[in-house]
Length: 129
Image (tube, rainbow, N blue to C red; front, side, top):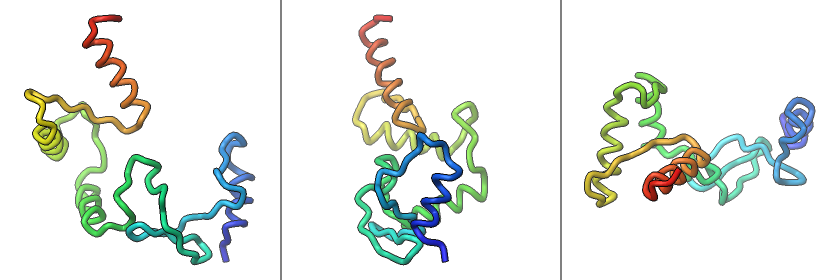
């Protein structure tokens, strides 16, 4: 049987030494449902850290799972270099919800990109380089 300890030993043996779990005795999350996760040993936990602050939508949400499956069966990813109706529809919804006249939307995949964009927007707004 796979255990948290056995996976921790394998983790330390193969992953870069500067990557470290945050805990002395880390758990291996095997599955999740709603606000709860279970480790490989069957222990249940209330997940206060789900999605590392970026995808905090709960686990195994049927509506989200169905939407992901539907999109993945068509195309998984293209980029903003191509036209994508779902991307445009989402941008329109975000723009409308913002209440900002003539709103523009910029999609990113990480907090770093969001921070970089915020700095570029502030610099552009101030007309400073």
